[in-house]
Amino acid sequence: MARLDPHSYNDSTQPETETLDWKARVDFRTRRLHAEATLTLKEASAGPLDLDTRDLDIRSVVDAQGRPLPYILSPPEPILGSRLRIELPAGLKQLTVRYRTSPEASALQWLLPSQTAGGQQPFLFSQCQAIHARSVVPLQDTPRLRIRYRASLRIPKGLKAVMAASFVGREEHGVEAEEHFEMPQSVPPYLLAFAVGSLAPKELGPRSRVWAEPEALEEAADEFAGVDDMLKAAESLFGPYDWERFDLLLMPPSFPYGGMENPRLTFLTPTLIAGDKSLVNVVAHELAHSWTGNLVTNASAEHFWLNEGFTVFAERRILEALAGPEVAALHAALGRRALDEALHHFRAHPQLTALRTHLSGVDPDEAFSQIPYEKGYLLLRALEDAVGRPTFDGFLRRYLATYRFQALTTEEFVLFTEKELPGALAKVDADAYLHRPGVPPSAPRPRSARLEALDRLRGLVPSEEQVRDWTPTEWQLYLESMPPDTSKDVFRLLDAKYALTKSRNSEVLVAWLVAALRAGWEPALARAEAFLGEVGRMKYLKPLYSVLASSREYRKTARAAFEKNGARYHPIARQGVELILARA
Ligand code: BES
Ligand code: ZN
Image (tube, rainbow, N blue to C red; front, side, top):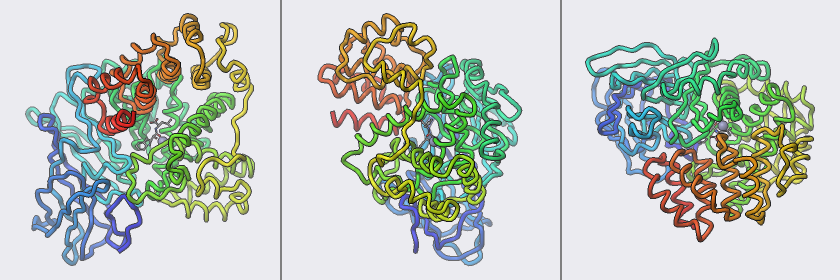
């Protein structure tokens, strides 16, 4: 018995799943999927097979001839869910589980028509990372193991289904439609993804289209028009794109993340629609995951930095290629601020601030922070600086070639790097990044002329002349660096001059609202309250609720806003906000 992933019941001595055949009927009335999952194993074998499940109502488990197989569904554990142990008779290679999901399935959010752009049709989407796939399909829910799959979704005829897979066809039967998909590339289970709603496509380039509700489609297509250039830039940095298509799905506002790198179909928050393409670094990030994460995958949540640190590094290389080193440096500076804040936030849990974490008994959603992203980025930057860019680029290519379509651990990364770049890890004190809390003082510091200009304006009201060529990123950096004791007059003047309360750039708006509310500048309150009802992205909900909850005057407003909007947030976001309010 060997359990290699603390977040899965998978036992590495048991057979592995090769393919999944998944059929589900989407019932918006009861908020359930009525489903059947056929698992084909890599080799026939006898003995127990342990699958991960959460809140699944198991109806039957049968073999390929329809004969029942014995199984035990264990009582749920809080983080892992319930182990489904199936006894395999000798020679068995295929089994089918019939089941239905719970209306509370942690991977699914069922939206009312009023929670969509169009307001007429319901919407359903999945979000499986890190360990929510098991609430939708019984499987070996560990990123160490990859599967290929086929899927069919039965949906109301008036709706469209999309999946992070290749579309095969649609048939209509009475009031329902059945849509078929196939995923030819093998993926870890957390990349299983789909959405159902009123959705329409628009072409963006030879390999990309964007899906959105018709009401939002044109704006989305304008915002993401540059995606093909991004793909080409990424390929010239990291090698050929292995997933054939890079389509985008504009999500409803309650989507809890900025983006999710579902293969062939990246999910994106509508808060990226700024009207000026200023937030497309998130698209670059999700695209970069096509190499770092989706192709080369973390072996468990304990090595999450291998996904996100590498991806932030790759994201900034794409940005640098498309927009130049100054823009990449501004993003690195934002990242460093976010890292310092996260380190402060986790100061009572220093062990969670090392890149390599130990997460037995810890929910990955609770351990989530900017640390694997930005501390991971700094380690890779330090290595790049130590060996020089050409050498590091070669290393990166060999890393991707060696581990493609596989998972690895931090320990394997260390062995590989030691072999490929002898002495480099020691030179940058990689141990301090990987195994010790905080950030080593020797960590690279983003530097640029634009950053220095910003530093000189800290806490001051800049002139129109001074902000003339500021990008939204510079506004965000300027606002996030506002000293906490800045007088309300500064906020009044800033808003009068630059109308920040009306900003369409969600990053600038949130940085502005947080700074203004921290200073007690009352006119920011109404916009903050309204915004908490417009979006469900955790990156914005958490700082806004935190700043409101930390002030005696605004605490009531925070509670009232949550009372009003909480039911419409994604369960993961709702939990996060609840925690903030409970601690206030
Ligand atoms: N894979 C993550 C989102 C995620 C992480 C979902 C962990 C569930 C669990 C995605 O690639 C991501 O990092 N998105 C960022 C954007 C990015 C530019 C840093 C986000 O959502 O803000
Ligand atoms: Zn990411």
